[in-house]
Image 1 (cartoon, rainbow, N blue to C red):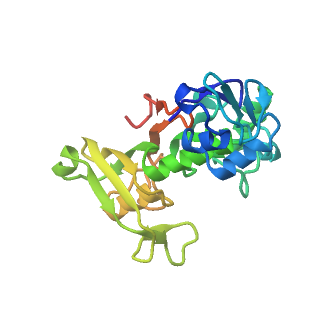
Image 2: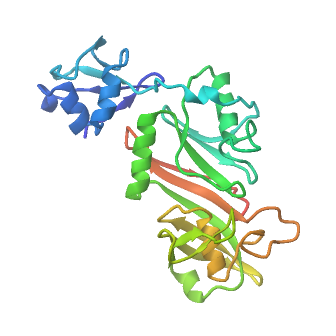
Image 3: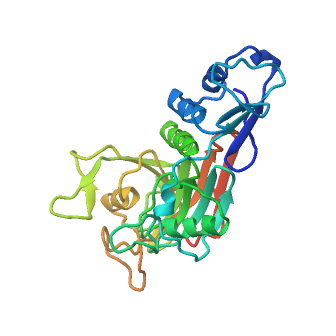
Length: 302
């Protein structure tokens, strides 16, 4: 596959090799760069959406060796402007032309909702881009519960978002979590990764609570004990699926609720949230394919 290179904000470029000479632009975008027909259609109707050597071209244009193909991937929509800008500085762990990753503290909500219209992580991110005078339509790739701290990844355009979501489906976009859980685990859990495969669905009569139930959706969690203490254990976990409260539900179902989890466990005096943190994320840059690893080495649950 041909390699896209970053240009200016929202712009990418690729030098056409001799092997691709004679190829129509539309065919090249589909077969060499992996864009869908719908994405190509959006680009071709955008001003300067598809250019060759500085001139806007049709998708039927034939490429020549040495041509410079330029693509504008910036969103035409500007829906993030509907957010109220909040100017407290977000903790940015990674940023490039298409992706930005932030650290979320426990208790912070990701998107505006009832009771949280301008104090969310999305509001902070909108304020950050407004200060930089950048118009970006942010899209979160996955979510974190309000009580959960950790790394949250946002795409800056719909093309990047589509590719990152596909990476999640393909298992190329991975997150790792740290959690302190109650009780003593088996020696086997310290020696090898364990798998929990138990469906999760809403708990009858409870508005916010989930449970393991045969009527639920498939949920798969992997975990391994990193450290066992007298009261509990520090676990490293990752998910095959992404159900609501999945880690908290599965650990409680195993008899090892998270410390501080008053919804699924016993709660912990002086602890205001479940001790769970998404401390590591790994994915491929959506256009260059470069491996990106983000890790909060000083995560509090080490």
